[in-house]
Picture 1: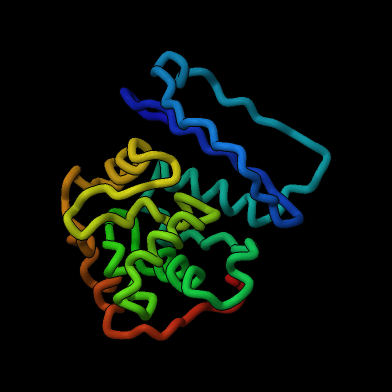
Picture 2: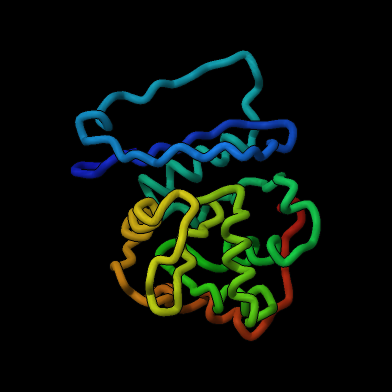
Length: 203
C-alpha cells in the first residue's frame, strides 16, 4: 500500500478456523522497501477454499484506511472472533473502548484510556492490553501515546507507529488529544461514563 513518494507498509491477512498458537519465536523486523521495490504490482492469490465474509470486511476496511479514510465511518467493523473477546476482562474492555471511541486522527493517553475502561489508575495495565492486541491497525493501539506526547511503545516498532500516526495527520510530538474537528462525539464525551455498551454480534 503506497502513494507517491511513500514507502510500502506490508499487511498480511488470512482467515483461521481455530485460535492461533503463540510461540516464542521472535517476529521478523518490519522493513519499509525502497520506492522502486514498492512499485512492483501486488500478486493476487487464489484458492479453492471459501473466503469468509469477515475477511472480505477486513480487506475493505484496510483498503479504505490506507486509500480513502473519509469512508471509514460508513464501513462495518469486522466481527471479532479472537478468544480475547470471548470473555469479560479488563483487556477486552480496553480494546473495545479503543476500537469504538478513539477515531481516525485522534490519540489518547494510556491513563485516559484506562479511565475510559473504568479504572483511571490502571495505565500500566493498559500498556499490557496494548501488547495483547491481536488485531493491530483495526484495533488502533498505535493511537495510544504517552501523556507527554511521546510515542510510547508499539508491537510493530516505533517507526511503524510514527508512520501510522503521520498517515492519520498527527504531528510528531503532539500531546494526546480528542481530534480537533472530531471534538463532538469524540472519546472525551465518554469519560464521564464507564458503562460498556457493546452491540450484539461483535464479541
